[in-house]
Image (cartoon, rainbow, N blue to C red):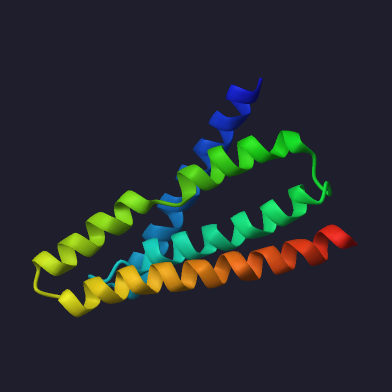
Length: 125
């Protein structure tokens, strides 16, 4: 049953990632991979919230694997971050490549911290 739930979480995460990236890319219309940046930062935030909430026992452990491995694992994408940054550098947009990498790491860390804080508040109620 766990495999099935992880698979469902993965399906939902992949569809969500594709949808967010497509919506942002169409709205912004730039070469900078803003959609993937938003996906990775929001995924880090959600992971922080879910970790804090499940760590305090507010949500059952049965949610951990489907949510963490399935949904968040399929939603966020380290490999796309690397490829997008590489391609920006190859296209001569070195500053944009560095900004994408640094921004993703810094904003991702801030998002995890914010998510953990929110999750602790939610989990304590």
